[in-house]
Length: 232
Image (cartoon, rainbow, N blue to C red; front, side, top):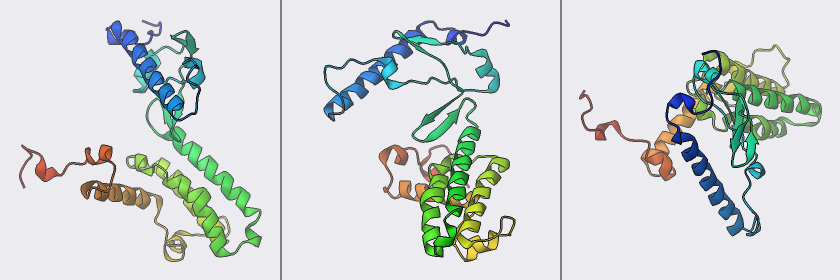
């Protein structure tokens, strides 16, 4: 039992591995056709797994992930090593779906921009500094921030510290100066928890009024339309 299980062995179904490989190859073939139709790739080019730099990842609880193999996977002639975290559309996904790696990535990137901006702060007026922070810091914090709705308070505080540092930069306040009231009254910023709540409320409103994409609208169902629900 000490030996780590091979991928898909713990499902107890041997054909899952073959079915998944065929599905991945079919997806790559569709993607290759998209590249050809959009003149991003020549029609005679072949589809190679290595060309797409696939990075598989095991998702699940820490106990389940530890049971999965860390050896290279052989997929259509290519050797691919499972990763502890992958990046999908700018979001860092870790094996436990905890968002810790994504929070670390965002905070380090935003603090880097803030440190670099401090070198030119004396040459900037408040409006210009505010615009730079919105472009380089706030946009990074707001991107896909609906994923942080269930984030633990400790991780939320890390993201809130980025907002406080950005506000001190705009208002040229010392590093330890209180800034919460200035964020609200001068900059008119919501704190990070409120920004996440606002994003979710906005998405829900758009879904209910047909302003959101169909794939989101289908997932948003009014409770009154659910049959068999408990009545008030």
